[in-house]
Length: 85
Image (cartoon, rainbow, N blue to C red; front, top):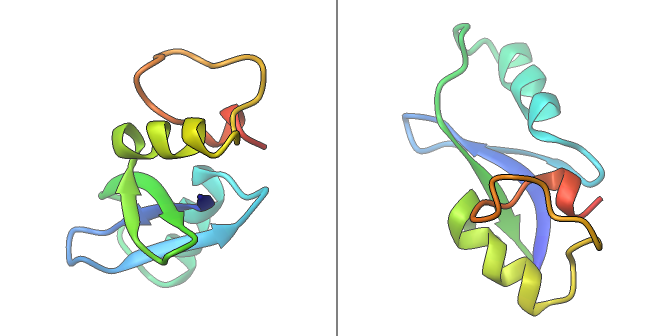
């Protein structure tokens, strides 16, 4: 299952916030940790197994676990936190 919004920084460090946190909250956390603006990295999610997945890989996981709301935001091939919480 998808557990939290996350961003994987270029150095491989993964930053995340608990739900209902969104990616802009993760960006704020990264700024608090002193990362340079603009924040760079891959936006995605943390699974309940602790694995980072990008937005594309996260979508079928959320779908298979019944985590999607009735309305799916565009683009339909990527998962957004707004699609779940």
